[in-house]
Image (tube, rainbow, N blue to C red; front, side, top):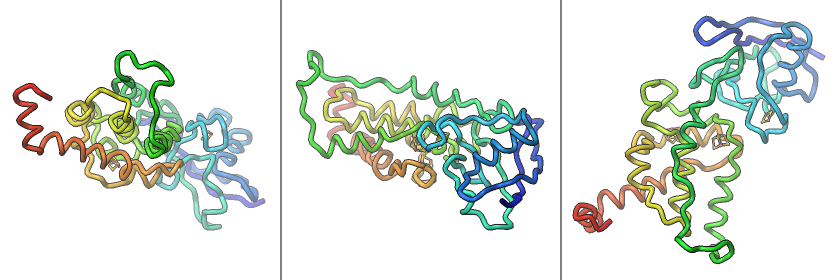
Amino acid sequence: MTKRTFHVWRGGGEDGGLSQYEVEANEGEVVLDVLHRLQATQCPDLAVRWNCKAGKCGSCSVEINGRPRLSCMARMSTFEPEESITVTPMRTFPVIRDLVCDVSFNYQKAREIPSFTPPEGSEPGDFRMAQADVQRSQEFRKCIECFLCQDVCHVIRDHEENKEAFSGPRFLMRASELELHPEDTADRRKISQEEFGLGYCNITKCCTDVCPENIQITDNALIPLKERVADRQYDPVVWLGSKIGLR
Ligand code: SF4
Ligand code: F3S
Ligand code: FES
């Protein structure tokens, strides 16, 4: 057993601040274990969101020493012995209290993505997909909706004013999944560019770096979607067709 120094955000977004605690940490523990010990021993009113403690529910997202991470997957053994550990709520979303954010922005953006649109009359079981198409969807479906990618993306992290116009990587990935799906009939290129803010993404790949499921968000979802949008915008035949109402 060792004592570790934790700085934990307490209070709301505007009126909150960091409080320092000396707290016990044991071999094999993760940051969430230590936060639970803080609740049990020093601050029973500490607000922490969590559920599975197995990296699968996406509830325990926070920032640890400034990096967006799942607190249940952040091993204490990865920090230097004398290093103090700072835990703050996700910066991009409004703080409700302590480490808990209001992430309803993300649910709003999810609702804006038009749902899967198979051809009219298509019955379940009619369609056969190539294995490569199945695998592409499966990669995106590993998402646990932790919203760490949404939190880290600079387009909204530092620019509250962009939230209206930008869906964020998680939902652009969903638009891409559907756009690349061979059975989906909707054209999602225009809406992705004009309403979901695909053009704001300048491929910094920070979203991919923080994804706990190692989904290649930028390379496998955002860049292919950008390529499709570019085809639509810059192919002269497609451009002319769109002008005269053929596409
Ligand atoms: Fe979390 Fe990755 Fe899903 Fe983004 S894509 S919400 S980082 S699991
Ligand atoms: Fe943001 Fe990811 Fe693009 S971090 S800028 S959505 S590559
Ligand atoms: Fe479920 Fe951390 S508690 S992902």
